[in-house]
Amino acid sequence: MSLPDPLSQPSLPPFEEVVTRHGATVLRVCRALLGAVDADDAWSDTFLAALRAYPTLTPGSNLEAWLVTIAHRKAVDIHRVRGRTPVPTEHMPEHASSTGIPGSDDDELWTAVAALPFTQRAALVYHYVGGLPYTEIGAILGNSPAAARRAAADGRAALRRRIGSGTGSRS
Image: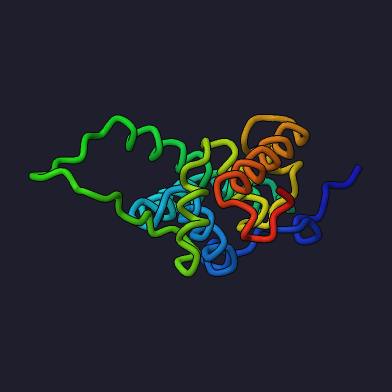
């Protein structure tokens, strides 16, 4: 019995290449889930965690889905912390500020997306911003592909109700 030739097995690309290739997608996902303020921190945390785990990753793995999964977990962590952290101000603002998430040309849409429950927002972001199929979204969210598809459908329906029929929706 001969040993497998290590040169014939697929290897992982250098981590710098992974960051260059998938960094923009991860940043778009982080911005869509968290807003511009927290997105940079989530992006950095994602790639620091990925760098630590990269040597143990199986060659041939879907790197984009792996990175979006890590970004999802970092976004959940930041989302939880944000919910517990008070924001000190001298005076209460009269109007809510813009969240600064992608699509600054359509503030109404992104404000509505930001108002969705986290699972619905995540399913929509991973599918439409990250370009992931529902099978991978289900795995990221810890659900089945059908549950991920249902969350995205519920999110789309909520957006249609909130934004109204002026956007070409089927109301």
